[in-house]
Image (cartoon, rainbow over all chains, first blue to last red; front, side, top):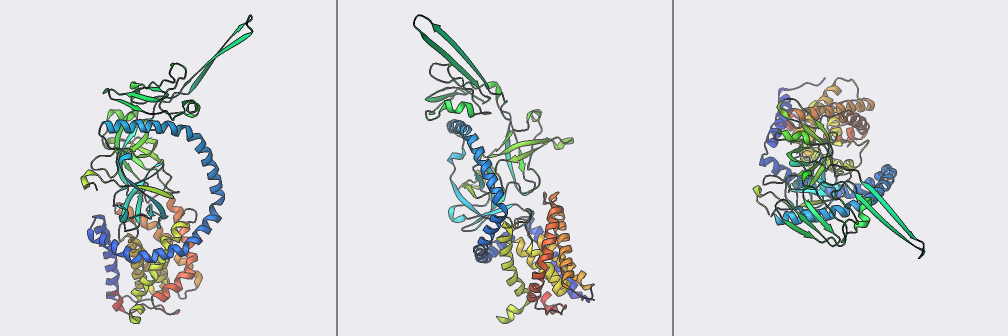
Length: 382
Length: 178
């Protein structure tokens, strides 16, 4: 049986107290703790790099053994998904260009104006609780703590620690992650309908047959503006009488119509002599609410908690889109896609309802990400 | 230089750095049922088995602190829990008359499960939310079983890093802790 001396018991108590002190200092954001992490990183980086080189073949072998079947199935599924979304992408592209023009006209920053750095994911999280990834770009390429990280699907997270040539990204589903967002209801979905009328006229004397065929396809509609589309361009008229013209001559509307569902235009070929006409209804303005998006760990869906309760809250629907709202204090610019509302949890009292969100970016399978070189005005933009 | 390397704290750091490198590279990618295996925790508990409660607490603190320095979670959280796990392993081990390898594996497995379960509770207590979830049960079981297997490797390593002979279970001189 071991004998505990007073000095050793004191030593153990000292270790425990030191831990508690460090926790307290770190939670308060003490600069000494940050400095300590920086010093340790400098010492540890060469060891970690060597270990990465040595263990990479083993990791690849492990992945090859355990994930091959899963990857093959996923590849097939993604190929099908890609085919389905090709048409929708073209329509979205046109809409995005339109939106960018409008934002530029109104002097509002948009994502296309912000420089970015592409980075490769070189490491996952070593913990079962915190959600982080390591990327191969750092302060040498202009990365700073707090900058938003995105991929093609949407928001991924934010930079939480930077070295010269690598950085740590706190993923959006980590419980320490929070950002102001905007929730926009999906357009009212009207099922696509197609009507085909065929008229046949036969003339006996000339033995000639004339067939006239017209097809009308109506797609779900709901953008906040009125617009008229012709094959060479789109003219959009907003309530403030701003007019924007975007060249859409490269878009094949004939090919687009049958594959596009749930987007924001109505296309009725043949109703106008010059080509299809798009009519956007001003009465279907999307409803936007602002709140705080917060991660809740790997196992729980992230949530949006609303700052203010108001009468319009009830109108938020499952499927509503969640975007970053931007602003002078926000670490991300306006307009980054975050995800969709999958559940509305009503709470009693003054705490208000909570929206559970499914992220559009798949955080468990990240290979390349893009760091937006954006810093809010409040911290001094670079 | 030789004297420095022979000091237990120096040896702990020398062992801890490559172990941490392994944790942040290989084990961060190679997951079992989606769970990251915890070699740093296994080493902390093994130090308790090899060198007793005091050494376990010291090794757990050092390994936990090193782990905290590369994580985004509050600094000192893993140091506190791993230190307690190392101390607990040493205490449990001191109750046994012999220390066969299967008993080492059992103690490492039990203490790993306990530490894995307690860590998110302490985190929640200090204000870090989201760590307590239904996934915790799976994480606890996988980490317990894997660390029990690791014990056959990490106990000898811990014994070497604390400069303790195979049958010696005494702590190093008290000056180490002062």
